[in-house]
Length: 342
Image: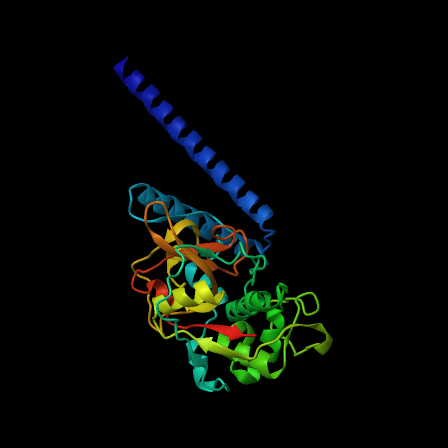
């Protein structure tokens, strides 16, 4: 009788484990199908889909572990699955992060003016240029390392608004196709100052509707009749000067900047103040271009930079990032920063 009871218990336990395994597999399959549907994913072969599904499942596990650590107070931000959930981190980094400092040696541009903050000026505790109407909708660069073009176009949009009261949606594709002789490299990366120099000498940059984004390299098709903004010069913030960056954002407008977005924690950032102790702040470390559109302080007292990204609205807080401010130039946000004159 005792042996029979043991056998019954073993069968019940095995059945329970089997049901749990089947239920988990069903759940993963449902989440995978929902992910593909939500982000319109398709793959070239069944083998590639199998691989991408495994990557998706592994990223799902990593995010769950990360958010458990957040719950224990180990992080100041949370993560969630997004449209990059089927990508390995090195693929994500290589495909999207295109601020390329090595191109500086071939940039055919004059030495920019250096920003000098006004003396004895008290800056506001909170700035958000979106509220003033100086920031366009979040864009999606796709699998093209053209972040530099979106950053430059965003700065030109904001400063054109400040000057004219008109907010144009400008063409990153125009910058990608037409500024190569100034030291940019389309989907392989670029820098913002050479893009500003192209607009200054061209003169002008087309509006997005006349020169739409294609997420690929193409021939220059600039239309003089479709110019949406012009540029008379550009100003660099002193390297590493967060106070100078704060002064420029507070008094001048949105600022183009580079940062280190190569940490694995960045790929699935969802909300909170981004701080990763592994983030670099040297010129060699920064690898992604963004637009600084403001700053503020959370009720907890944590200070942050408000940053517009170009990964689409599904990433981060509607496409935005809150980055730790006054934290030793975290992720190099003030290492290479500039804005255009219009």
